[in-house]
Length: 96
Image (cartoon, rainbow, N blue to C red; front, top):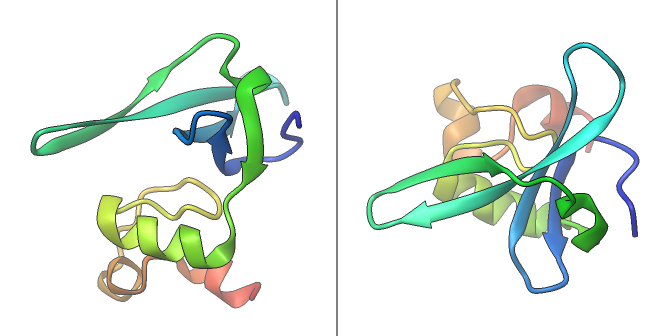
């Protein structure tokens, strides 16, 4: 499966990939979620989109969103206190 829109996805080996649009074009690229001891970050990985297995389900996105502080539906950082608590951003929550 090759992703066609931004969001959070699972790879074939169950890693999390944040898919985003490039700033200067509508091309998509992927960043692998790296979790180390007490920190996490997304690291650009060329070719990672070819390893995408499926998009996260809403339940998976909410659980992971609570853990990492990102909306796992659209991939944006959760900044609103309620959104952090719910694990999903207000715009994405409104689409459900």
